[in-house]
Every structure is written in structure tokens, then in C-alpha cells.
Length: 273
Image (cartoon, rainbow, N blue to C red; front, side, top):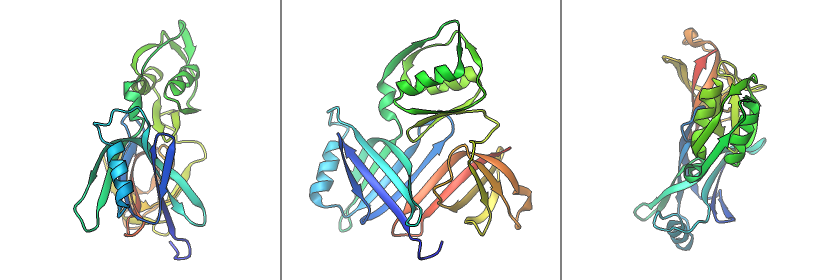
């Protein structure tokens, strides 16, 4: 990427209704998200926060702090010329600090973790549209719905349990791909990519190393870009390994981001179309 278009990495830490944003500190972020019912996870490291801020965050995010305030982390990344996108948002599950002199605060988070404790009940009439059920599931999870599957009638849908586990039930009953990405519940046909989402990946567009064939398709590393998402289409072009060339659907994205080291990458696992 050209030097005139520097990377942008921002971390927001929310306690209650207050969100503090950090950009100028040394930031390191890594995590993973998948287009299934596995929770996305993220580890954020912030170096050389003031002692006052560091102590406050350690206290507020401690598992022994039983107050009901929101404790969340938000990661945004991109380029100065095109802005940033939200890479991850989730509930903080753990915090720790390192030894001096460069004290590092590490926050571990899982997406929608607070919803594991929310119990819900949904019962539909003898027959209901998949899209109607998906809308209710999204509402239970306090998410927006992106429904891109072929709609169908579902018989005798009923569910009682943790709100988060409803995503698994929805996928099974509808025989679709259902997953959470950011603040959206996405429902799509398993064999189709998201509409309007297609990346052509080759050496010129940011591919790093040689794509690796897997049991399901391919695993490939490339420079972070804000347009790549779970469920999007990936067209790979490779002169060194032409066997991997072709069209894929991304089902897993690992991210490794930093504002002061070389890391600013996606690693995608994708299945053949």
C-alpha cells in the first residue's frame, strides 16, 4: 500500500454508556470470526496507557466486578483515504497487564457474550416464513437483520433457551448459513456469497505468500482491506499455484492488526463455489 495512504487502527473501550477511543497509543489486535454459530473473539493490547486509565479499566473489567454496566471493546481499521470499518465488537471477558517498563493492558473479548445469559422463548404458528423467524431472532439478539436466503416455510418452530443459541436453531431449521457479524444477523444460502461482495485477490491486490489448499477450499493471507467480509466472494488468481485459482466463499476470517508493526492482515479460509 502506498505511503501516502497510511493505515488507521482505532480501539474503543466502553464502560456503561461512555466509550473512550484510543488511536495514538501502540495498539495490537488479533482475533477470529466465522460464518457459523461460533462466537467471534478478539484480543486487544494497549501499551502505555496512563496509570489512572489502566487501573480504571482493570477494575471495571474484572470478573469480580458484578455491576451490570456494559463492558465492551470495538475495533475499527482502514486507510486514511477511504475511512474505517468495524472489524470487531464484543463483550470484555478478561483483562490483564504486563510487567514494566512498557506496561501493556490486554483485553480479551467475545462477540455477543452477554446474550449467553439472556433467556428467550419463541413459538410460531404451525407454519411460518423463515424470514419472519429470522426477524424475531435478530430482535432477541438486539441486532439488525440481513436476510439473503431463499425464503421458505418452516413448520412448528419453537425455541426456549439462551438467545445466542437461537442462531444454531435457525440455521438447522432453515438449512441455511446463519451467523452474527458486527451488529447484523446474516442469513444466506450456504452455497451463495453475499450479494455485491466480491474481491479479486492476486499479488497486485495484496496477496501475501502462496494460497494453501485445504479440505474445504483454500486458506490465504492478504493485506487488510475494509471491503472483505464473512460470506463474501473471493476470486483468487495465482501464477505460482494455479491449482488454487477460482471462486470461493469466505467462511472464516482471522485478523492481525497493529499501528506500529508490520501486521495489518486478513487470513481467510474459504470454500470452493
